[in-house]
Image (cartoon, rainbow, N blue to C red; front, side, top):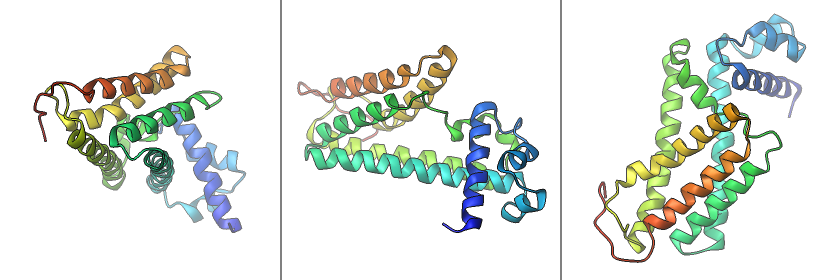
Length: 211
């Protein structure tokens, strides 16, 4: 990584930490510049304005999370050819990774942007929407594969179930921070895992909705 790339990465790291700690509106370019040890011209060489910073920060965050999730669910598929067992293994791995974070999950940048969406331009808002829809579709595809082998025991909308994992993770992050209990995120992921086991348990099945 060249000096310019390293400086750009350092700016993004500082900005992301500040936004997750106190929100985008309360994070100023001046404080990012001071923390990075840059001049204003040095900052604006990399980012035209605050929205440009937000776009690149979001792209970096999404790419990092995509790599993490891709690796976790790839590992699950390697450990079992059974679609349900593969998914359950992946969720267990995800819970373990979240449990290993020393101070708990730092927060969700996408959620932070949604809370203050009027501060951002259309491209930033579209990036957040695209990321959420992409992972909803990814989880729906996994659930379709499971349902083909293990029909749900109750009538359930698989789109809603696919969205549930993001709701569980983001909600648990908020709960963990509010109650100062980092372990809540791990426990909520494991509870979602238990729900999935119950939905697709072997037994009399009813037709699923949204399939």
